[in-house]
Length: 451
Image (cartoon, rainbow, N blue to C red):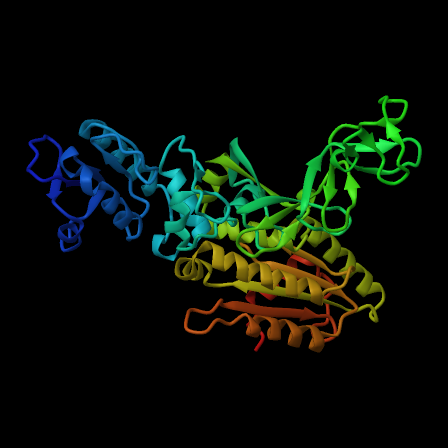
């Protein structure tokens, strides 16, 4: 196994293969290939500084253990050097099973890798009052280099992460998504803040309603409107439960109008219309593990084929055989078969990473679907070749549009996706007596690429 990088103020006598450093600068100037990091008790005072440097570096996904317990979730916990050594060895074995270009990973893939190397690890949101939404997942800031962590829930939607336990439910401003809100009681009529809870009297003689103090006279309670002396409650007057009075418009009401004012953008929101966001503990799902372990090329093409709403290749051949039989009976019934062969997918994924490649393939599938009609059929064979069957189609039009789509997918300053376009059209390629799906498809595979 590779060496363990140990941060310590003094040398350590151990049977394990370690290399000792006193600071991050000293480590950065060393070319040692390592398996993990260990911070001894003698360096606990610089532990927080060290973990930030590690998570911000090319070693962001490495396991980092401490000799002393440190309340910082960027660390992987407290362990003895002996136990840490076992964990480092296990993580290296896990990493060896993956076919990943770690430098090309996007933030989603980085998070999956981080969780994959930590068995039964939970991603736990931490309460930070100064943050916009009050909670954050600390490691995500280092993985995505942004404070916005809403993208993590896209992975739960794809079942790559799974909810473990809800931690809190936060209400957010529907204008700027901030949780920094305070609630204000207002007059329902004029929206003034100048309101006060008071005892309200109701004169039965004239129906006048006002604060109790407005009825108080030297002789007792007297209605200021009809001047009736109010002696018996329930007979002369009613004293409801405390109500509110607005001192700007004199409106009397039972409940104030409540608004949630945002401290960040000053927007006023009705409480029942605030956005709600739940924060959960998250774990890597079995599907997330498979996502990393499976060959990425197979995953890319599987998702690409699914987005195209393809039919199975055997069904495609049945339809092609049927169209061949129809054409032999009616030579005016022409059809077109298109073959797209992807030559350099491994190289493309290795350079751009899984996420970027998947985005490009999703865009390709979207444009192809826009081009085709409901009667057209698509299928993908075991070699990830895309077949398209188009009845009564103008060859020139479809070829030009497909070539334009492929041309528009070109990326500046990087490898291009290499796609061969081949076509079989019954007007140009007359069918033979023994022609069928198998012979047509074999002829296409052996033919030259359309220019």
